[in-house]
Image 1 (cartoon, rainbow, N blue to C red):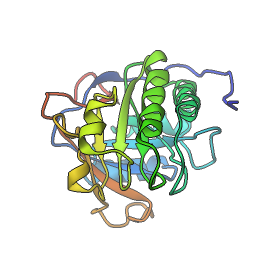
Image 2 (spheres, rainbow, N blue to C red):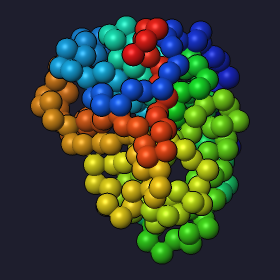
Image 3 (cartoon, helix red, strand yellow):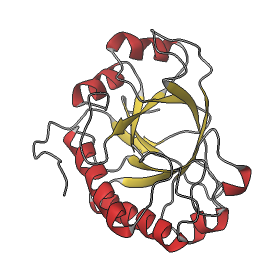
Image 4 (cartoon, one colour):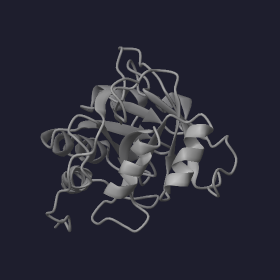
Length: 235
């Protein structure tokens, strides 16, 4: 049962477009003020990935007002959903529920259709049946696709799938590699469109590297790129 609300704000301004390769951005699990957003932009960051909830939105998750603040500061925007604590058990039903909520919460923020919304796959309980992980991921993918967004998969430590399974058994076409992703778990054939690194900018506007990580845009081996909401007509 989802706790997603029904209200939908006006659509955020900007252009839905493929992210050019080689640009530095960051993901953060903390709200960003206008001053902080401007400070990150001044420090060379060009995009931000912020969080939505699994079953409900928390105080530290993205809001429509913050999304506008990020765009106003010149930062492109994408969305990622929180993952359960380590050693969780995925299932097809859970993937459908969380994927539906990810899309609903993203839409309620006013984020237009077409941008990449990321599923966080990491910390899966060791020994979990591969079919359950695949079922979770594909159900999440299908729910987000049905809502008009581009589903992406953030692959971290202990994803529960091999490199071949991540590519061959899943429907995703957008992959984001965690800073601690083992080399043998990088999705086969396609590779990555975003690569995360430990934060390198130091403390920015009071936000330390324990609260944000760096990310770099890439074009994957099949020519794919992540899709973001850019604040202007061109990147």
